[in-house]
Image (cartoon, rainbow, N blue to C red; front, side, top):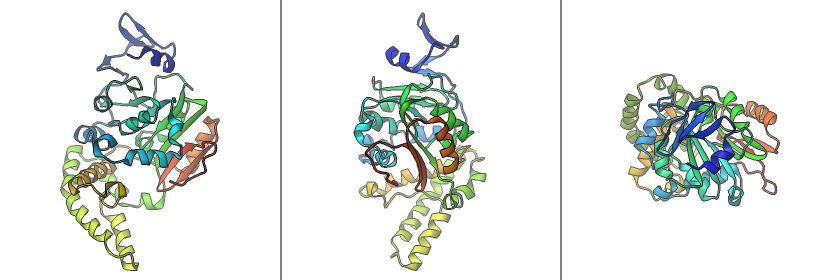
Length: 327
């Protein structure tokens, strides 16, 4: 137990007495080196849990041999790599730990939180002083307000029951001179009228195991089709066919992503199954508008920030001397 770190992030509601961890007088289990404020059963059980268990190392740069996660983090934040060094960072929703792996490699001390299934991230990240994992809900965090240098929420906000209230809650934990990075799916025509949101009224109610098998069955054929369409010369007909595929063919295909150019079809297919299931299975998926995010951020943040929309919507603190980049 990292008592020095705990003293920084918890207030007087948390105490360690006679080998027991107490929060507001109630004992909190400390199992496998993890404080557990929530049970292992949650609204994420069946979809995100399945992804963590079956594809636990898929997105780890250290395992897949890419810089995909590192490049995504640096481009989406528009922060220089040394900005993270020495910062106490709250990660709201860690999944299997791919972001945390990069964030601590950049020099941050990371407190990673997820509502359930955190043993997978613990196994991936190991027991290190620069990363502490806590099982808790990001809509009811047990930490001290305004105690983190960075509040981080990547690919998670839209999957909570009430994204605006979740955003308000997590922003209350950043210091006045601290920074935030929050990602949401975009609430745009091109996003909301794609195959994903056409199918979700049905797929989010399906048994996750049945849906996972269904996705695994159709993805190989969809993979071949979208690869074929992508190779058609980009004349008018080729462009039309590609747009039809984007809106109608249910697959996340990264075959032509430069980071995956040297990867086998087997690997890219696994990624396609992972992300297609991830698109269709969550119980909640409610993108926030740029306007709503900006209004909430203005009420909570003291530092200059920007909200940009580039296929995804990003709330991020501006770093002095770094120009805006729509990444």
